Length: 335
Image 1 (cartoon, rainbow, N blue to C red):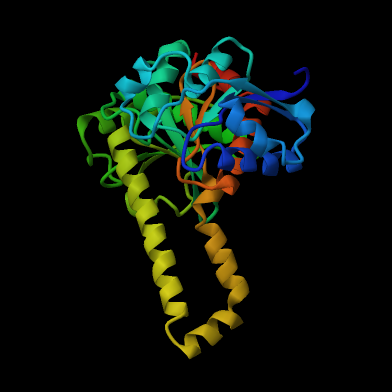
Image 2: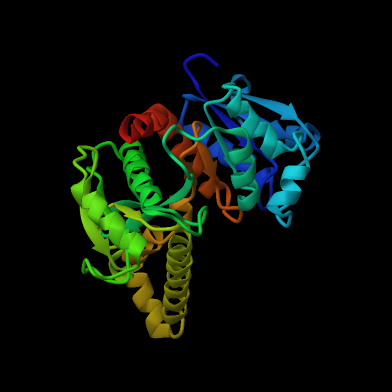
C-alpha cells in the first residue's frame, strides 16, 4: 500500500505457526503504524486467529495456500515442492516488487535455496551471506557469514565486510562501522592464506563506509571494540552456536545458583533489578532475525523456535532495513 512498508510474511514457517506469527504481528503493529503485512498461508487456519486480534484490517491481507515447507524437508525437497508453498509465494511477492521485504521462521536451508532461485544477486557480489546481530559491552555488532557459505575466498570476505557495514548503518545510523576478521590470532602471520590475503587487501582499501581494525579472536567478540565481524560460513556458524550455548549455560547455572538455598533466594530478591538487566542482555529474542545479504531484495530469517516476542523483533528489523534503504546502501558501496 502507498506510503506503507509491505512485509511478505511466511505465516506457516517455524514452531507454533501461524499462532506465533500472528501474535508477533499483533505486537509489532501496536508499536508501528507504517507497515502493511501480506501473509501467505492457509486462510482457514489464519482467519480464526487473526480475527481475534486488534490488528487494523486495512493493514493486512491473506494470500491463501494450503501448502507449506516442513522443518524436516531438505532444501532439495523444499525446492521440488514448487511454487505454491507459503515460503515460495512470500519470496515471489518480493521478486515481483509487490512487497518490500520477506520474512520466514521456516526451514533455513529451504529459505536460502528458494531465495537464491528466485532473486538475483546484487551486481559484483558472488555469494550471499547470512548475518546476525550480537550484543556486546558497547552496543550491538553485525556478524557474518553465519552459515550460508562453508568456503569463501578473499573477495567474498571483502564483500561481506562491505555488506555488513551497510547493514549496521541501516539498523544503527549513528554508528560508524568498525570491521574485523575473525581469526585464530591477532597477529598478521596468523590464519590461513585466504584470511591473510583478505587482511592485506582490506588494509589497502580506502573506504569511507567503514574502518578496518584487523583481526579479532573469539574471546574478544563481545568486547565492543569492533561492530562488524567477518568470517566464512563454517567459522561464523561455529562461533554462533558456541555463543548461544554459552549464554544458555550461564543463564541456567545462574538460575540454579540463585534458587539453591534460602539465603541465595533472599540474595536474588535483593538484586532483582540487576538480574533482570542481566537476563534481558542475554535474551536471544531481542536479537532475533538473521539477514540474508547479497540478493537484490532483502530476506529475513527468524529463528524457528523463537516466540511471538522474538518474531515481533524480527519484524522491527524488517521495517528498519526497508526504511533506511539497505539494498541501495550495499549497491552504492560495492560498486
